[in-house]
Length: 115
Length: 114
Image 1 (cartoon, each protein chain N blue to C red):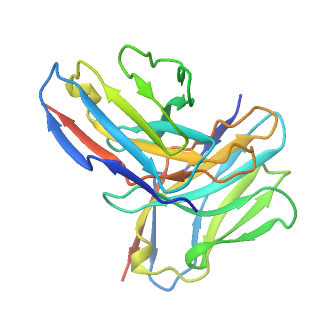
Image 2: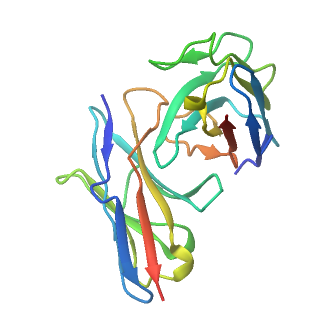
């Protein structure tokens, strides 16, 4: 399985600021995803990061709030913009090789607290 | 649309006793089913998956799960629980006819008491 790292592992931010989270994979992967896990909740898919094109966002998530980049097959960033306390969550990067039978593997997550 | 239900928010079990975490699903096409575990302050770790074939799937750390098509269930089991199995467990489903989206259940917290 791929080894996935995320930076930062945690951060405390002020309301109105933005934070960019990085996801690095040790091998090329076809699919990269970003999830949010609010305190005590399950995982919600924010978007699929597409290499060389705009990310595909799920209902309720928009590019202006969560801009995503994916410049190559091993790296992606998620920015949480104009943060509010409601954005306090764990943000998780996930990867797979793109077949529907493939396992998705997850990074360690970034724990974000917004004051 | 695909969905997953984990009917128990928490399961308590004594160490050495059997552990079962329940999961039911709904998909239009063929179900691809997954179990993950999340330890405190950690990401999700993959335990096992069912794609096709034998209904009993064996995975990491002594866990297994049984696919039951008629009951649309995929319960996670371990014959003898350890205190270190205390964690948050997530069931997830992907509809084979609907692309790559993985849908998660609400999670079940397992507490194994010594």
